[in-house]
Length: 327
Image (cartoon, rainbow, N blue to C red; front, side):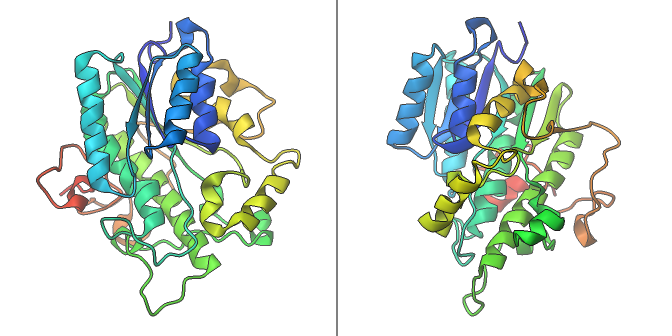
């Protein structure tokens, strides 16, 4: 039996879209290849329903209600995970799939902690959760982060007017748009692409600092316009996305979910040539090909207080941001 499949996989954002498809793909595996599941998502009917569906398929499931826009909630979720592990309610924690994400239309919006909402949910919440649980992972283990190639603009993305990342000091990226500056569709796209580039830099730094036996991967699910990721942009854009999703070669939760489920456990769907997207980019422990980050955040310079750096200790008695910094 695969070592990770014999443990527990934690998935954030399991209530819809890619996260739900991934959860159910794991739950429907044969018993000998099926890990236990910890589902971390916004409390409510959707979380209960996906947990019940996974249990009906035969999986051992524990759901943990958590608003990822509140770092206090994220820290509490990590404590609940540790309690469940200590109580033997689930098998050893072998993988974290940081799937949850948002694309916020109005970059004036802030998280409960005052950070720009896209950056807060897509990156900061997961950095907090992973940092708090890093010492709970049992090797061999894997951390899977959700990336996106939107940070780099090619001809296709230019035609679709997908905004690339505009990189700045991460402290600045975490700030919402000033009240006297208008929020535009372009600024929303830049915020999303910045958050995904931050995840890529973070993944390399996390791998450098992770204990032996814990590997980090960044998974690109492909162009997937029909999910709830764009719900903040209104039902019209979501409807258009669902139409585009029908085009051959465009990804969907149905296609990408089984592949994402394969990343932490090595299930054969990962190697299926019929997949509509490339293999995930596994971050090497040494000698990476990380894109060069400008200014203070270059991986070739010492990291001091970078939001890109993972937490390696609890931060319950410190400033909310400090769990995401190395000092």
